[in-house]
Length: 204
Image 1 (tube, rainbow, N blue to C red):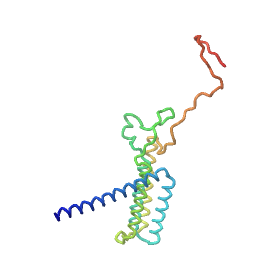
Image 2: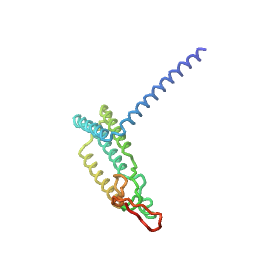
Image 3: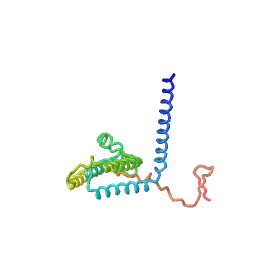
Image 4: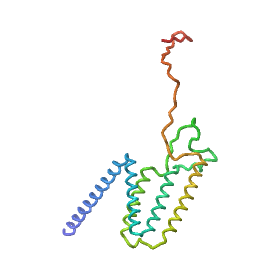
């Protein structure tokens, strides 16, 4: 009987913890859903958070490896944000480019490999993680930071050059301005009515 009572208590505690964790997940998801429409505010928050991290690194004069890793991760996210979900190089030789190249072609919106919200979420989450790492000395590995800066600039230039060449080669832009609107014939202000007699048109 004692063992059955202990099992009941442990199960009730486990259920309470599970329900609390589930509730926290629901609150967190609701917060993300609420901020989804506010793209400008979200990116301003991410920019302020990144500047706060850089200011902390500058004042503490350390954690350059964390800063370099964060920069490389953000660069990879940015490249995925600029890249199409389906690489046009896969079927270019057989079927032509996937994206429209002329005004009279079928409209196909640009679908990113990494959507804007996931891009922002990954940037914000990684920056928060980097800030947390600056509170632990074990991540403060001494390095000669100018080498990291030069290497990052070189890697950024090479990566962006390759991405721009890819966009030029397959003729696409990583932005969608909306479906094109086609202008019809100008309205002359007169209504035309078809008479019951074939071939006769009566104007009013």
